Length: 118
Image: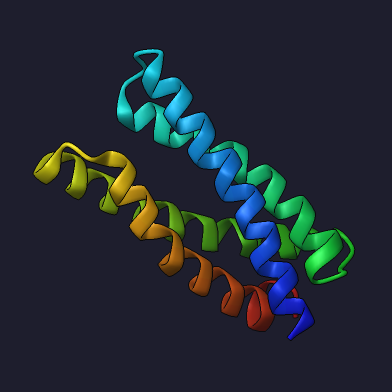
């Protein structure tokens, strides 16, 4: 249970970084997909470092990084699909981003626990 709570805490920090940067860039006039990508990338770096060293207490390995990046690609596709749909339908990219977060979080936790940091 402690690991899951830590995972959620790290996720919240990374989500704030992700969404905060996305919204800042969008406010500055950057295209919504570029802003989404920049936010996602910033959150990604912090996420990997914190989950590797704090959540799963694992040392760095190239294998873990490669598995992590595969999961990231899947989660990135889910995020962009959600943002694209809500941006096109309701002109609410942020809502799409927020709705993608629980799906990405659950997917990332289980794959991290069972596959990335095995």
